[in-house]
Each structure stands twice: as structure tokens, then as C-alpha cells.
Amino acid sequence: MGRIAATFRRLRKANEAALVPYLTVGYPSLDLTRRLVPIMARQGADLIELGVPFSDPMADGATIQRASHAALLAGITLSDCLSVAAEARRSNDVPLLFMSYYNPILQYGPTLVADCAQAGVDGLIVPDLPPEEAGDLKAQCEAAGLDMIFLVAPNSTDERLKRVAEAAGGFIYCVSLTGVTGARSEVGEGVDNLIARLRRYTDLPLVVGFGISTPEHVRMMSSLADGAVVGSALINLVESLPEDEVILGVSEYIRELKEATAGKQPAS
Image 1: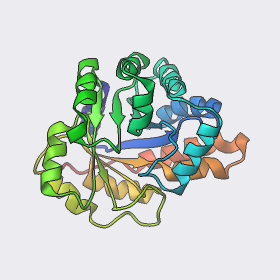
Image 2 (image 1 turned 90 degrees about the horizontal axis):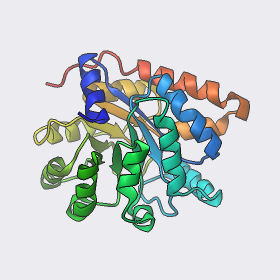
Image 3 (image 1 turned 60 degrees about the horizontal axis):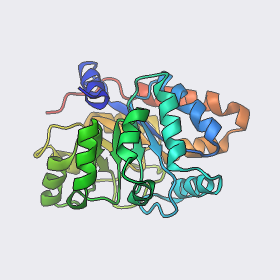
């Protein structure tokens, strides 16, 4: 059993949902990314999503676009992301996910999946690679023991949900709204219906992302799904704090979010 499956199995037994924080690698600095990943793991993050900087992150809103642009200006590459993952893996067993658009993967070359496995990466999320076009990469992931994670949205058809369910590994990423990432005051309507529809086709864990920013949001998603991704709000927090307060601020934020995942009701 891989680390992702083992983590969701453990959480299910503990009646908890998964907390999945997201960081853009190299923002605001590579050193801070290296320091934050193990700290988030210690404070309760169940899986950690590492964003690979890309010049045209079309599924992401202003916050992650800004972070990705700054990381690219600083020269951050996919090799740096692998280095961050490898260092984090030496200190903990929390599943690590790369969120990357397909262009950086293609540019890196055919050894990417093998290098991810060696670095301790557990899964790939590629927002612009649909199942119909993911056959080669998915086969490489399966051979290397990585999970390929696909996304669905509230406007996904039942045919699309079934196709994703057949292709997905690890978990399915449920986008909470028909838009881009970004912290919002309310979580998108319709996510409960999306989850109910998707449950017809899969027993894989379902994790909700886009727009989740508060413990209340996490608590709400924990009652509906198997986990919640928090990205833009975390980056906004890092940006808002003085450098000497970032570690403490992120630690407290992750701890508060994780507390909101307790007491999950079993799926009907």
C-alpha cells in the first residue's frame, strides 16, 4: 500500500478528513519552502501539495499566479522541486504531491516520473492533462508506484466523472467551483452535489480544493468529502507576515485547520 492510500486509511479509522496544504515551491524563497514543508507535516498536514512554478498557470488565480511568477524570476526549476521533496522525505512520511502543468513535465524529459519516485514524491496532479491524453504518463506513474490524480468540477458531466473515476489513483480532486484558485469568503455552491454524483462511480477518497481558506471551510468540506486543499490562503498568510513571524504563523494556521478535520461523519 502506498503512502497516499495508507494515509486515507488511517484517517478513515480515526474519523478525520485530510488536510492538504499547498505551497508554490520557491516562493517567497526556496529556503523558506524547505523549512515550511516539515513544519506543516509536524503541525498536522496529512498530505502536502508542492506547486511547480509555471509561466501560464491557467487554473490558478492571482495569488498563485503571482507566487509562480516570482519563483520563476528567482530561477526555480522542477529540479529544485525534486530537491525540496527529497529533503522533506528524509524527515517524514507525509505523502508529497507535485501539482504541475504538463509543459514543465514535458520539458524536463522522460526521466521525470522515475526521478519523482526516487525523491519520494507520491503523486502527480496535472490540471491541463485530461485522462484521454494521460496514458503514457499514467503508465509511467503506475510502473513507478506514483498515483496520478485527476480533477473534476461542478460542471463535469456524468460521462466525464465516470472516465476520471476509471483513470484516477490515490484520490480525486474535486474543484469546488467553476473558476480559478483563490481564497474566498464562501466555498462554491454545488460541491455537495458534485460529490454525491461522483460517489456513484468510485470509492476513491474525494478531496475538495479551490476557495477554501478558513477552519470553518475545512470543517464544512470534512463533513462532505475526505479532505480539503488550502492553497491561496496559505500563500496570502505567508506574504502578510514579517519574515521572522512566518514559521510561527504558518504553524498556528495549519494546526487550526487540522483541528477542523476531526469528527468526520462516515460517508453514507
